[in-house]
Image (cartoon, rainbow, N blue to C red; front, side, top):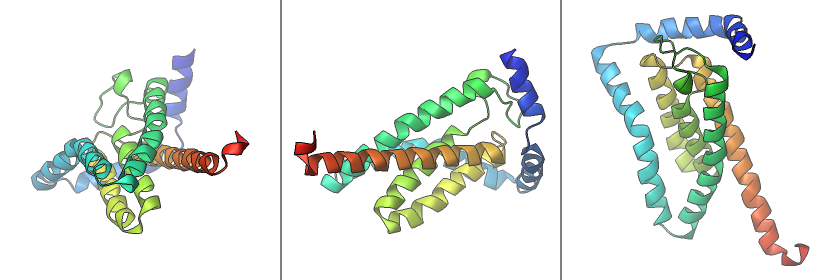
Length: 183
């Protein structure tokens, strides 16, 4: 029954028309050079996250608070992404239909946008650098034909929710530290 509902949802997916149009345009942009560049962007984005977090953690108290906020955001983001991937089971644009690695939502985009949202909240300069990079990661997933546009947008919305959640947790923690009698 659940599989039938998921198939029906995907068959009548309201954004599929937009997804098809965007996919057609993005695939027209393919060339050997930009495919190779987007493979690097896509494959190195998670390694860049680890290196950036390590550098931030070593840069003092503000860096460690950033890493903590990032961790608080990334845990629920990745739990939501993986849960939705399994529940939705959307076939990727390239035809890959493995349920554990389904198309919706894009975990690459979710992670990249989470980093951009958390860093952008802490520093306008880092936000100006990381939002375009997160957008490039999302674009790379579409150009490599691994995700639909709505998968990338879904990952972005989940990232924003995770970053908001992390900011609320840190605000609660700071309030609690400032007012220990309120425990």
